[in-house]
Length: 47
Image 1 (cartoon, rainbow, N blue to C red):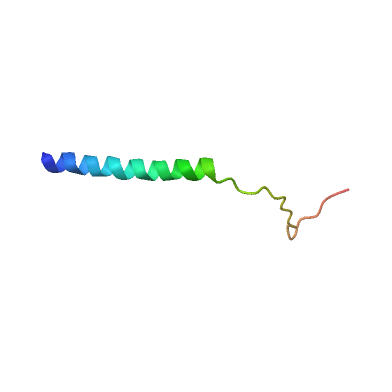
Image 2: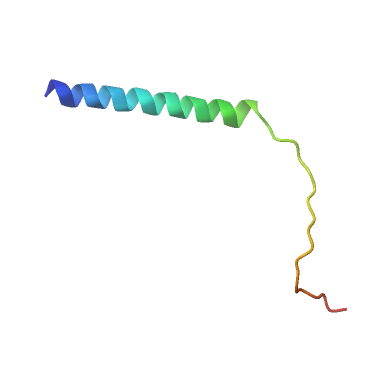
């Protein structure tokens, strides 16, 4: 049983570290907004 508790503790710790890192990346670093326009080959617009 102690190995199961140790596994759960390690899994919870690694999950908490990963979630904290994702939260920090999502809230602290905002990408610069840019307008992107590309032509699509083979598509014609009717007038």
